[in-house]
Image (cartoon, rainbow, N blue to C red; front, side):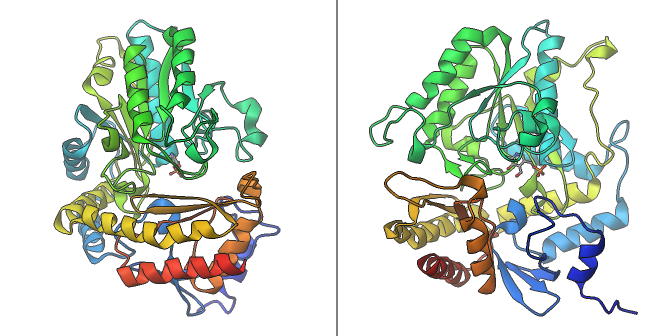
Length: 444
Ligand SMILES: Cc1ncc(COP(=O)(O)O)c(C=O)c1O
């Protein structure tokens, strides 16, 4: 017998939602079905998913080919321990990823979400230096406004923010350097005339303490939760050059940017860079199932090969390399090939640019940034001083509510409003969403 209470009423009794002030936030959307770019609610609404369900969905919801791959895999093998066992989807996916990743990334280590992909990379880098006789390399350099996840290690390497404030005493110390945030240049320059001077701080840090640095960790080309900051590719190339010059490892966190989000399969391709370790998650399963992947070079891997068992990488998760997740990941890579998804993202990028650039004229819009399938508006309360309330700016929830009334789901990061639909969005659907955003901004 169906429960007479609505889903949201039942939800309120036992659920505790992520990033949600349960006392004051509006009730959650009761989503009972999804297809393509649309979510369908219990009360009969059809809502366009403008954030690809927290940046994970690529080919639309309930894609028939992904559904079929998942069902077929469930009939064969739903899960098996990955320590001491292996299975076809894990091996196939590792082979396919190595084929498409920046050259030189060859050793695939599975975990089960974005934060664990980062934790694995940090631990790998740390132990790499111990195993190779350089235990003095114990520190990490990360960027201002970085976001790498919510587990304690991932929080430590993220920027200090209202997300991490309550946990400060739990976190390990890291060294932070400038991010290439051209709209709010950390060294006070202008992009059209600068020579990427924001890299100089990284260089002086490496000069000062290079021999103690285990790795430099970055979100290449697009820093996500820290403000949807789009980089000049020269900065990315510079990070690789400096890591090489000072002999430290480079970790690229492509949990968000991987699988086409920036218009290339991997953001590192924008500067033809191969990091020593890359972190993947989110889009790796096209938004179907949790999976984390940290891929290292052969040199990193070889440092763990030893008769001495203490050099083993002692890390694993119950659901490492889950076969269902790997099978959907493989089917998603097939779709990239069969449907020329990257060309579709290129079209979406042009449409985002054309739709959002004119909004620069609004006093509330400080900056417009577009890369691949992500369109960003940085909102300000004063365009001359660029003042804003940051992540806790009330404009975010107000905009989200106004868009939702018009059946568009967005989730601004405070004053950073972004639109990032699944790649299958049609030109008409994208035009509708962009018109909706423009209309809301004109009335807010
Ligand atoms: C760059 C980056 N790294 C790591 C993570 C953490 O991923 P997860 O939420 O799956 O733990 C995120 C999540 O948004 C991310 O954007």
